[in-house]
Image (tube, rainbow, N blue to C red):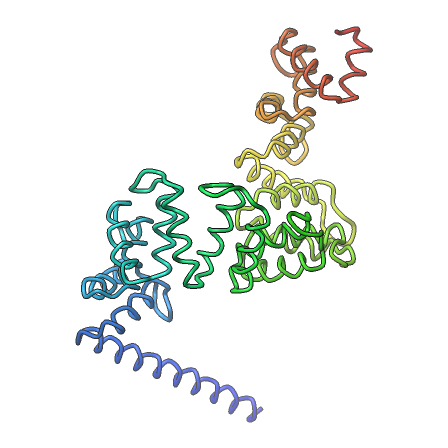
Length: 378
């Protein structure tokens, strides 16, 4: 018993020592910053902005960044610009002010701000959209081996903005960014390798890049990694448990595909892997439907129609079917068409119902084609 008491006391002593050292380090940094040290001012800004060991406080971060920025520090200038662009620290969003600070920083060769200026030109933030200017700044950033510079040059080639469209060039730039640790580029490289875009398909290498990206928190790659486990791709054995874990991570970050797939898994249940939970399915479909996922909108309509996981509500069913149908979902067209043609739970409207049924049938939906034959509809 005495042994464990001593261990606990030792741990408490160590924790207290760490806190004392951290406080002394912070006090020393604060004194240096007050004394005019530009490096200390930038460091204090970073500590406040990221909440490193203290409560996060962007207003304080901005105060320290501005002190250093006004003395000409390029990193601080870039951070001040970022805060104006993203309306942090209680600032009103001001792209022109952001651009002013970005230019000051870029004039000193700051690669991050060169990339930010490229983004401003690409998206017309505080300036007119100008893809030529955008890629010029992205290239300047990439020349300094900045990963987001590589990434954005790759995107411009993939989309054919200010340069000839070239998947081969895009692949080259994504690989450079990926090898430097850029999670977004790693996911995009994985996708191109999996699909064989500008290269031979290679699901094994694709899996490697998805993993790197997913573990760095990229939601798109988390969804793709889940999909690889779900279908047993890239040399993996099918594993619905691990697939669901990755889908959950991606869904929590707002990935619409993960929300939809996970909704399906909870709607039906998978023995030994995912529990059937209609309430959870409804929540996931709603999240995806709000992001205009037509499949989720259709499934929500069906759940409301049959009262699964929600109270039966034909009006809500018709509403979700209509949203999905407006995006071209054939099943939604067919179901809504029947409801309207027959007046099933909604006000009868044979003309609108028949129009929807014809579209669904023309799209190749066998169930609707059979329905029209049995009801002698043309």
